[in-house]
Image (cartoon, rainbow, N blue to C red; front, side, top):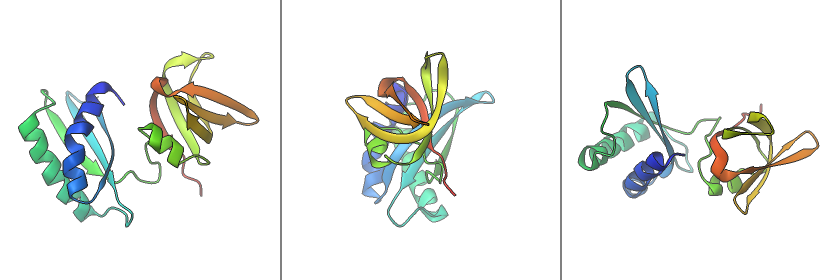
Length: 151
C-alpha cells in the first residue's frame, strides 16, 4: 500500500469503524484519464450491497471534506471477496496457511511475482513457501498481495 493509500485509510478508518465495519484497505489506481479509489470493508457476518451503499455514503462525505485526492476519481466500495487483498502485516499473520499471490515493487532473484503457501509474517518479512523452498520477502517490497481462492 502506498503512503497516499495509507493516508486515505487513516482518514476513513474511524468513520468505517463507527458503522461497525473493518476497513480492510484501499487501492488508488489510474484508469481511463481518472483514478479509481477502491475501498474494501468487511465484518464477521459478511458484506451486503446495502453495507457497501451505507459505507459509500459515509466514505464519500469524509472524502468531500478532507479532499485527499485532488484529481477526478470514482469511488468503489466492496467486500474483499474470495481473492481478498492483503494490505498489512496483521493481514499476513491472520491468513498464514493460505495460498497467496503477490507482486513486489522491485525484482528479487530476477522476479516480481510470487505464488505459494503463506508460512508466516514476522520481523518485517513475509515468508512464502514455493514447493519445498521458503522465500523471505520484505514486507516493504510487497506492492500487491491477494489470497488465492482454494476450491
